[in-house]
Image 1 (cartoon, rainbow, N blue to C red):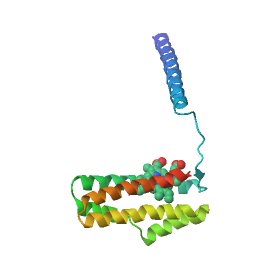
Image 2 (image 1 turned 135 degrees about the horizontal axis):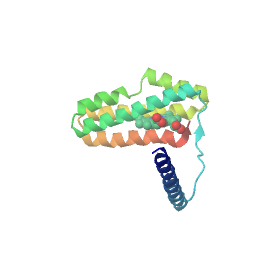
Image 3 (image 1 turned 60 degrees about the vertical axis):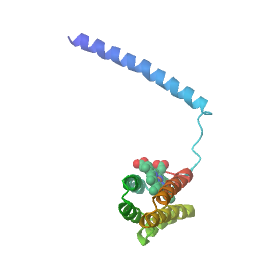
Image 4 (image 1 turned 90 degrees about the vertical axis):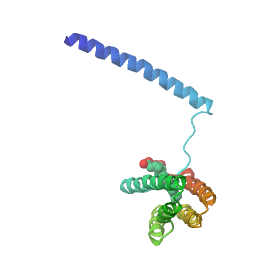
Length: 156
Ligand code: HEC
């Protein structure tokens, strides 16, 4: 009985090995198709690990907020969209947070890229307050693009 178990375990590991190798080969072919592996040439933010964990937690919260705003607009609940967007807007607290990262890393652009995101959240809120759903959607798209402008420049 023990021997059968051992044999099937070995057989399982063997097939796993084959399928892993096949997946790896397919992935390698795909990357070559896309022009080959490229170095990550974004600027590394030199922050302590604990701050990186905090920053990423905040980021996931930002993404959640974007999801909530999208849902509120989809439901035609523009006052909810305005309220949620306002929470992501530019404030002394956000300024303090973005400035701290900028100062710690010596990366001035972190502050301006962060400010752009929070200010576009304010613009989104204004459009929603005015009841302009189309403009709110345009501003939502601008907001997401501003999020990514920072991701294109910086990494952990
Ligand atoms: C000023 C810079 C900046 C802005 C603006 C910014 N991010 Fe980020 N974001 C980062 C950095 C730096 C990381 C870490 C990247 C890494 O791990 O290399 C990150 C990571 C993330 C992650 C991954 C989190 C994880 O758990 O790994 C998500 C999701 C994210 N950001 C969402 C957003 C959203 C949504 C917005 C806009 C509302 C936004 N970010 C705006 C700098 C920024």
